[in-house]
Amino acid sequence: MNNYLEKQSITNSSVPFNACLVISGILLMLMLPVLAWLNHHEWSRDQYWNSQIDWFIAFNHYCSSHPELWLNLTQLGNAFILLPLLSFFIIVRPAIWAAFFGAIPLGTLLTHGGKALASIPRPAAVLDENLIHVVGEQLTGHDSLPSGHTATVFVAGTVIMLTLFFSNRHSSRWFILTGLLMTTLTLAASRVAVGAHWPLDLFFGALCGYFGGLSGIFLTQRYSRWWIWIKQTEHQHIPGLILLFWSVSLLPSLYTQPPHPETVSWLAAIIGIATSGYLIIGHYTRAKLSFTQTYVSLQLTYPTLVVSWNENRSQ
Image (cartoon, rainbow, N blue to C red; front, side, top):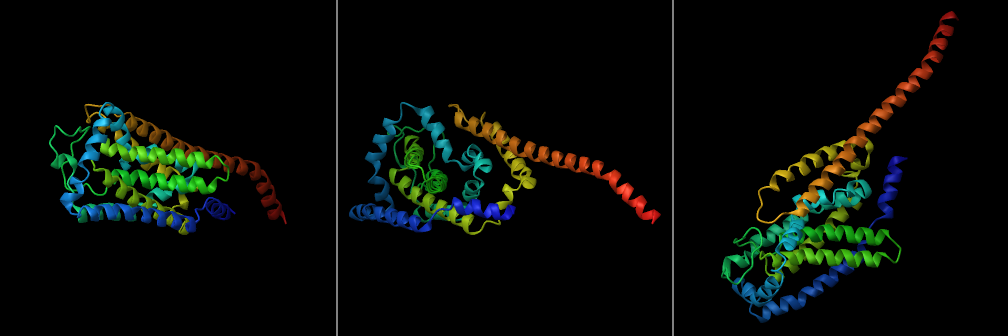
């Protein structure tokens, strides 16, 4: 009966992949003008970033008046922080939480494979420090394209947006979709605001994140055995303990990243610890309740068993 209900809950909130293919086609079509623009500029590694200097400087300087805000927002592109922040999905929508992890193989392949192949320098590696406003760590490597932080937030955004959109038939789902999309785009834009990426890095990072998120949804819906155990009460202490150590490990890092306070990191640690506490305490409370019920049941049936055994002996 439990297996049937679990399968039903997955089916009821499933994402139709025909719709996702249409969205994928639209996104690929959006790449055409970008590729045409790059071809017009006789694309090369140097020309790629040279053609974006004006965009980058304009937006980077426009955002320079709120450094702490952008530093906090950009931290959400770090999966180590983002996942504890979204850990409450283990309780309310376990399939969404599982899809985050299902997206890791393809998302990692596209993002890191793209970085290795493109080998585009970071803005801080080629621009004079007087032209760029860097917030947080100054990155100077040749791994700018695509943006890994953008891919991460688009993995999470894609999974959450598509799952909630297709599982909610109310008209409010359009407002939810719009709000989530604007949030995801803002988090992606933070990478230019802090001086870490060129504008087009975000576009290609978003594509990597979308297809990674789509793969996570597919693996979660198509193959449920690898994750369905987290919905079973007798196993919930396992992700609870992992999440607890994960969230606690964020705390020391909060004291080693001056000069700006990272409110988002604190929030992620608090939510992760609270969620892990719910899972662990809930598991052992239910286990204790089950033991108590069994003990009481034995206490009630014991006299009957004794009487029945004595009657059998006398016969």
